[in-house]
Image (cartoon, rainbow, N blue to C red; front, side, top):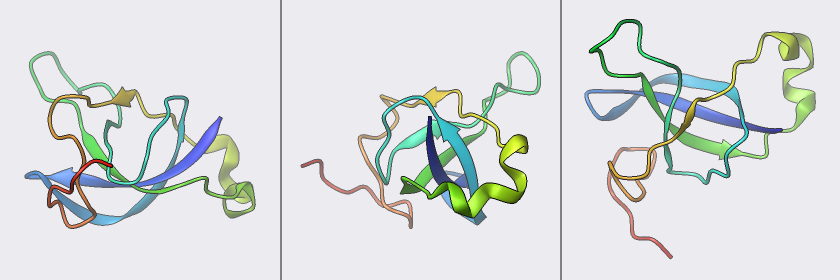
Length: 91
């Protein structure tokens, strides 16, 4: 189990504050992830951008039992993007 922080994407841009999630997939800062399943058939699943990886468990001790897991990583939408939503090159 890996703890990560993300910001939700709205209109393709990171918006709002950071939220801590559990990730079973290997993710890096700038990766786009599917946060949860869509609310209804035909709707797009909510997405977020990873802003921090390896979040210390001490940061979530008070609400650890309420953490949710991301569904997975988006592979084709963009290779990588930074926190402002601009594409950055892969290394």
